[in-house]
Amino acid sequence: MIIQRLRLALGRIEVLALFPLIALSATWFGFDDLSLITAVGLSVLLAIGSLGSRTEELGATSNHTTANGRGALIAMLDRVAGQAGRDTAFILLQIDDWATQHDRWGHDTCEELASRVEERLQSALRNGDLLTRLGDSRFGIVLAPLSSARLGLRDTIAARLAEAVADPLPMRGTALRLTASIGHSAMIRHGVDPADTTFKAAEAALAEAVLNGPNAVRAYAPGMGRARALQCSLSEEVEAAIHDGAITAWFQPQVYARTGTVSGVETLARWQHPKHGLLGPKEFFPAVEASGHMPLLGQTILHQALKALQEWDTMQVHVPMVSINFSAGELRDLKLATILSQEVDRYGLAADRVVIEILEEVATRVEDDAIVATLQAIRDAGHRLDLEGFGLGVSSLPTLQRFGITRVKIDRSFILDIDVAENKRQSVSAIIAMANAMGIETLANGVETPNEKEAMISLGCDYLQGFGVARPMGLENVVDWIRTHGGSGKTIHLDDRRA
Image (tube, rainbow, N blue to C red; front, side, top):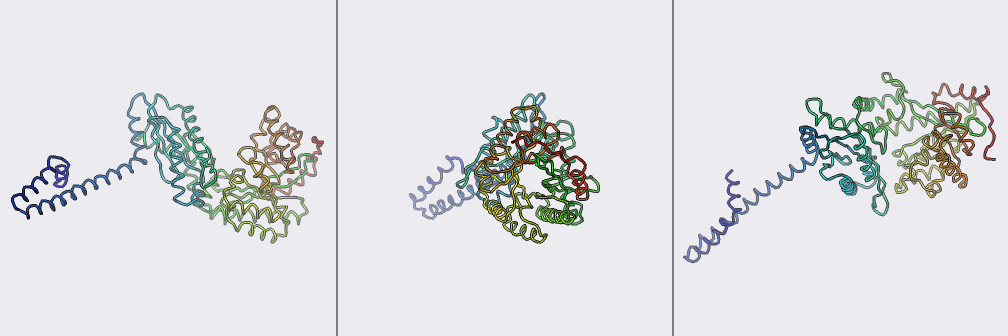
């Protein structure tokens, strides 16, 4: 208290003016000691005042840092909750695959990257909207009070934020493309703490978006919290499930479009959970990634796929190729190509019978030297490369040529209603014509109806896959399906429409 009063007094100019007056008077009347004491005393007192000011400044900085986090968001939600006739919404945005960016660019560059993203987000918001950074790659937004935070408005703002993140960022001589998962919720006023309830609702929506991402947007709906709890629970069970054989390889047949004969199978992971039943990749892959066991799962599925192909050969069941998926994290391992070659040799298989399938978004990461090197090594070893989701992203002709892509998988979104949607026929026709010109094969992924099948055949697609051909099945059912498919009239020789 004394220091505070002293600092306040020293801040007044009339008080400070007394010190030189005292010193001059002391010198004039010959009191040199008093002059010295005055000079030294002034320095000490000014130091004390400065110390007090610095302490308060640091305290204010600390409070500001705290305010720019969850506390500020909760405070604003509380204020709006107390305003009759006013509404708001809370949005959580998380940059996708941040760990990968951190591994590649390092902490300092990623801090710069996050700051630039924050600036872009701020420019996409309205005056009065509150934006704060929560952790390394997550941002929270509370909308300024409005009459109604209807779903359409929230979706519009979320789309604007996603576009701000997706706009290419110049970084170290390259254009870096980011995506973000977004969850949002309107103000939830029921309960004892509307602000906290709304915050947790947006967290649940974001968890759902991440589960369906990257680049997904989800609005909160009751029950989303259960999905988040399920992921937390599953992440603790992943390792045991892999070792115990609860997570296994399933297979979905692929056929030649013109003849209907089996051309191969795609390997898919399924988890037969004792409590939750059969789980697909979208339901449990986030838990695998969170647990850090994606490499272990990848090796397990690889072994099962190669062993299955070897067994089918022994049984004289003709399956020309097996496709295997690898995540971006696995492809970043420079030892993957060597491990893959060793395992293929161990099972006595030819490299061109083992197809490596990659997502289009992975193939477009031409700035990721590790992924580029791994894909080139895999291709040089003689493996075929499938590009999944072709047409949805930004892959270019140089990308297809650089990696030696042998087949593109046309996404289901192009095939749905293709028999009645002329614009989709034109798009698919262009994709197939481009692929043919480059010597690349095409596979229609997600064919479900006879009309879709006929349309893809008429456009000249090389391969078909989807529920209209066969659903994914366990290893024990593959042989029976292939024999039935090939021996009961289900294999229909169709006209070569391209001729």
